[in-house]
Image (cartoon, rainbow, N blue to C red; front, side):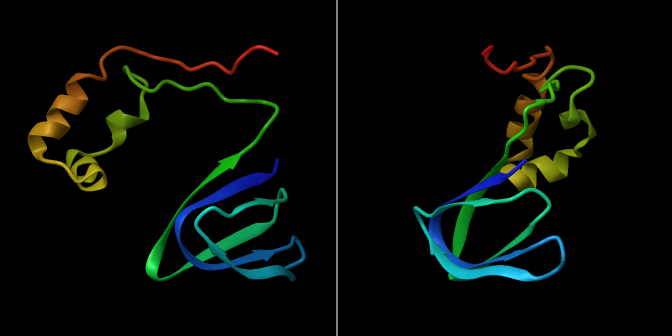
Length: 112
């Protein structure tokens, strides 16, 4: 399954290495760039001094459905201090966040 990566803002270098360890791409990327990395290839994104924001989506024909809330949620395993730091929020806001995750929700892929 390929990995689709979009550079939201900033700039930096992108390196892609193939399955045999050979570098197949080394280039600069900036905000607005979109690129696709083949399955089993490794990608490295190295930000410039100003930083780089990006996200990647790994596509698959076999989606995995998971709980975002409730007793089997991964959020239960994350400590309050990690959530506070990750979301740059106060302990009070973290408690409010936890209190809103009591019900289970599952997202399903659209039917074809």
